[in-house]
Length: 365
Image (tube, rainbow, N blue to C red; front, side, top):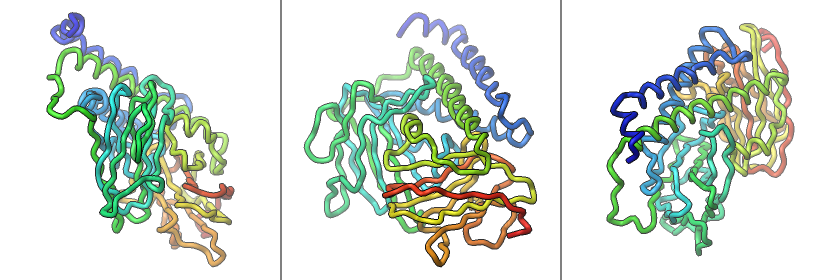
């Protein structure tokens, strides 16, 4: 335990610095191109509280990489980076000097992908994949049991590489039908940790944790706000995203992304048309707010996927974003928003056709 950390805790300066950092992070809401109405600013401040919770969990509650815990860090009330409503996200911090084992059951969820990454979000940088394994390539026992080794050294069976830069493992589960599919139940353990217990909390851990949490808050929210600003020139269109950038900040290697900005007056609607649906594991479309949080998918229909979508007789798909129900089966609710960001994904697709968009008067629908 360092003398400086002890002193910061004793004199209260550790907490004061934490509070000052939070105040500084709040300036994100004043970004020049961000919406400045009360509704969007309120969501922005709520977003900061959510990201602070994510940071505190990562850097204080689950910071010990020798006793890593696989947990859901993005869900209905912690959202970031166009989080997919069809996904269950889990992650844990890891130390590449260790070897780890993931054990559990496969379940019936449509897609299961596990990756090791070098996550530098807290430094305002990238999240680079250092190893990846898709359930389609896993050895799974007849009773659905899985065992996977995470290690810098190649292992027999299911193995996900780590490098000297690896600091996190991510698990993505993508559902087609959350009601009827069963999620994978997985546990992460450090190999050789039997009988060991983590060291008690300390002044050092507190100071490092508070600093890490606010650094994560400031840099991660800034990165995604800047990304949202970059969509403005493509308002109400849906161009192919920069796939290299998507991968650099943690995108799934199996996904081809479209990202953009949408804005609709009270009497307008956005019509999206995918004339061709390629051979793919799945696809989906979702509506997000300015801060790149998926809208409230618990209480509203804000996304559609390969299974839930209604298809036209020719196999194409039409999706309608509007403030009121147009009577179309693929209606996406704006949930009180007039603008925000949006995302279309082709997942495991053989090709990546365009998605056409047009703005119409709601009365025309």
